[in-house]
Length: 524
Image 1 (tube, rainbow, N blue to C red):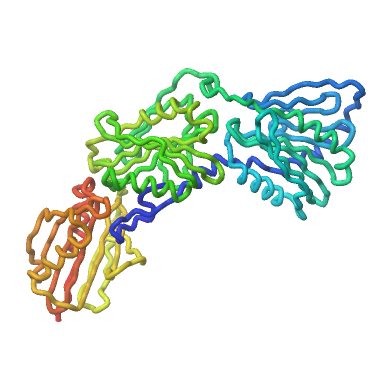
Image 2: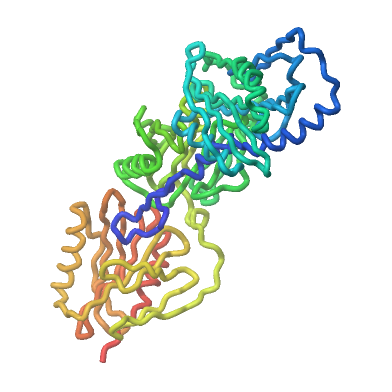
C-alpha cells in the first residue's frame, strides 16, 4: 500500500496504487496441504504394522484440545493411534488401528468466508491429486455452529483416495477435520470415519480478554529508519522484526503469537491530510471486499498530528482489520500499520496500539542524514531535442531518464537521491517573453487554483535570456514546488522543469539547479 509505488508524478498526482496482498499472504499460510495426507498414509501404515492391535470391544473415549483451546476432538483411543506432533500444518494426525484409514486436524486462527474456504479446500486438493471429484457436499449445524461437509475423491501418487471431512470457519478461526482412506476401503469404514468426525466440537464462546500467551519481561528497543526521519519503539519480547521485507515496507514485524503483523512504509514526499486519507482508503478498497471504515480520528501524538484509521474488509477470503497511524508533514509521509483478522482484533488491540504509540517523527532532520544519496562519482551525459533546438547535459549519477514520458514531454527524469523529478517540454512555436510567462502561469492555474509564485527572475544563461520561475502548488492533494527554466525565441519554446515536495526542496535544490543549468539552446 505504498503511496508512491511507481514514482511517477507526471500525471499531477504521482501516486500509484499498490496493493498489499503480499503482506496479507502471510495470513493464509497454506493451511490446506493435502499432500500431508499421502505422507501420513505411508508413515502411519508402517507404525500400524509395528503396533499390536488392542481389543475394540470396550470403547476408551478420550478428548484432545486444540492448542488455543478453540476446539476439542473426542475419539476412541482403543481404535485410533494419535501423533500430537506430526509436523507441517497438521496439529494432530491419527491412524486407525484395524485398517489403513487416517485422520488429521489442521487449525488456523484466521477465519475465512464459507465460500472462500470451500474453494480453497477443493483447489488445494486438486493441486495434490488428479481426477478430482466432489462426491458429496452439505452443511450442518452442530451445537449452534455451522459446519461444512465435503467428500472428495482423487488419485495421489497413483493411489485412489477419498477425503471425507468437516470444515469450520468463524470466530474460533479455521479448522479442518479430515479423514481419508483408499477408495476401495471407504464404504467399509465410512461409519468409523463419520464417528470420528462427529467427535469434533468448536467452543461457542471465545474469551477475547484472555492473555494470548505468557507475558515475558518487556524488552523495549527503539529502531530508527535509514533516512533518520522517524523511529519506532517496540517490545522485542512481543514483536519480532523480519530481517527481509517484501514489497514497499521499510520494516515488517510479526507478533510472537504469529497472528498479528505490523509494517512501516515511509516516503519523503508529503501530502495534504485529505489526499493521504483518500490514497489510503482507495488502496485498501482496491484489495478488500466489503470495505468498512470502523473508526477515524485525528490525534496529537507527541509533537505531531497523526490520522488514526481502523478499516475492515475481506482480503483473499480473510476478514481483516487494518489499524494504523498515518502521518504527513516535513518528514514526508509515513504509514505505521498493524493488522490482524477480525476475530482477533479486540484480543490484540491493546498491543497493536502500544506498538503504534512507539512511533516518533524527527522534526529537524539534517540534510546530510535524511538524504538517501550515496557517495557518487559524477557522470555527465547529454540528450538532444528532437528538433535539434536544444541539448541538456545532466549528471547520470543523480538523474535517470525515464522512457515512460507522457503528454507533451520530450524527456522525463527521476532523481536518484529522493523523490524529485525533471522534465523537458519543447515546441517549435515562439512567444513573446510576456506571453511565455502568462502561458506558464495559465498552465499552472489550469491544474490547480492553489498556487503561489515564490520567485521570479530573468537570467542570462549561455548567451540567451531565460525566465526562471519557482512556484508552489497543491495538485490533487500533493504539495509541490516547481523550479524551472523557460525559454522562447527563434528555435521555439523550451521548458526545463524540476519538481519535488516542499519538505525536501531545500535539500534537493542545488541538484535541481544543476539539472536546469545543463540546458543549452542551439540557435542558428
